[in-house]
Length: 141
Image 1 (cartoon, one colour):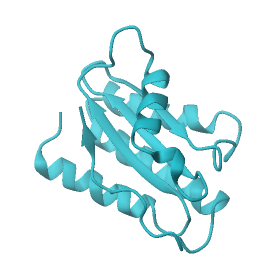
Image 2 (cartoon, rainbow, N blue to C red; image 1 turned 90 degrees about the vertical axis):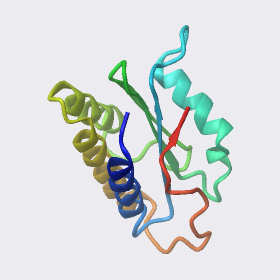
Image 3 (cartoon, rainbow, N blue to C red; image 1 turned 60 degrees about the vertical axis):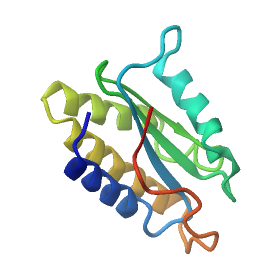
């Protein structure tokens, strides 16, 4: 999927996306989306298994990418699910898909993280008094 240098860039992009708001952002990579599940179903499942629904204000966002499939989904907690304009979360996923289509998946994911950070700064502004509730590291399975 990504080498160590790319993972460090993703981790830095996650940390940047988490600045200036009360949200949490996580990226999870898999080779393929499990059979009989859509990327959206898988993202929702992972969101719960990572305890992202238990953040203080339920303002966590999971960016899920099935790398070899070029598929992705974004799952946002109830505290920010309605953030952004209609179709915002789909547009974030489209940014990732665009990166895959031009052979630059890392750039697509980083651009999506920028968008997520911007909308969280707008819809969950303020100091993150709960602290960094989730690790910034990229997870894989």
